[in-house]
Image (cartoon, rainbow, N blue to C red; front, side, top):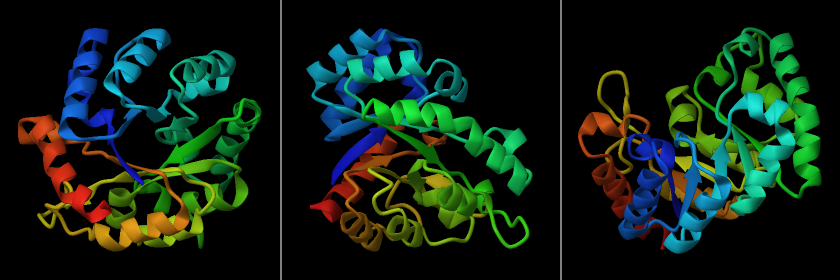
Length: 249
């Protein structure tokens, strides 16, 4: 399993193509092996591929706008093929699909046709969770419905499931065969349990890493949405790398 950087963490440094190139270089210098592209400014797919190649940082997944996934599927697939990324990710479920079982099923229906096209292209369409998916909907929840009733793959987020009172290991095991990328994100013991650098919180990544290996997950991406609140986002990414890399050795 390779350790990657979710570039959403570094979005303030990914606003222009020149920013993105420099960020790839800095991420590589920290020791990261792969990246997820999310939260970056506009960039041509060919230029992104060049940056990925010259930095020796493969792009293993993205978060892409749902509107493009649904309404611009063919072009999105073509772009992902250019920069050699096999996984197109949905970063979150829009608000209008969160209120009920029926609304969630409408979301699943919305993704059916693009999912077929993406699979036909030899790629996967994935869903990334937050905490709201685990709220009770009368004996079930949104995540349960997505797992049981959709054909989506997943990028599970260790922080958000822990924050919701669930054990991420349960989902890692359950989603075996439906997940190649996962988010490693730690939870502070402080009031409100904010996100923190991996190793500075309460999540034990040793059994999580073991479960990921058992499930055949290939890439663990460090994500820290609020890294800019700590000053230097790259320093936060370095803290996470230094904690996680020895555990993955």
